[in-house]
Image (cartoon, rainbow, N blue to C red; front, top):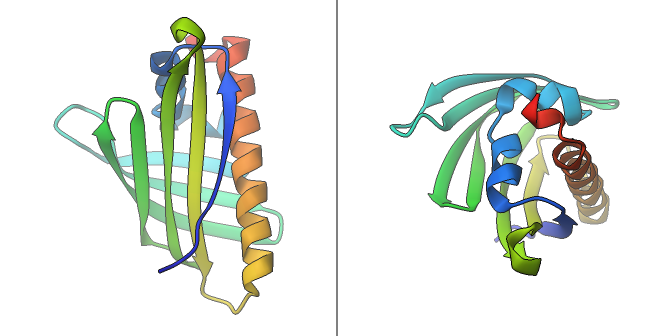
Length: 150
């Protein structure tokens, strides 16, 4: 079984406010940094994204990949790789837990990445950690700035 990397951050917002930003794929390029384009290809019966195409430019790593999304609980979203040019595996999730009377949310991001080119496990874990930390920081800034509401 592949190892995964995870990290958490607390955001000053309700889980619903945080999930609204996570689920707004059309605006990912505005706050995620590495994602240059996001396109919802398919929606589920609740109107949530089921498949999303993402164009990624993270310097040395450029990729065009499609992810399948599932929404197993109100405050959880997970994804897995459907197709990619550079990746063999990209599985992840956001789990949201209300804190401090519901005005703060603990966001845990879990990620497993495997690339098609050979890479040392230690380097891969470091790359996962960088991706997670940037995503969590971007999410926190986006939610707390109120930009998602405009």
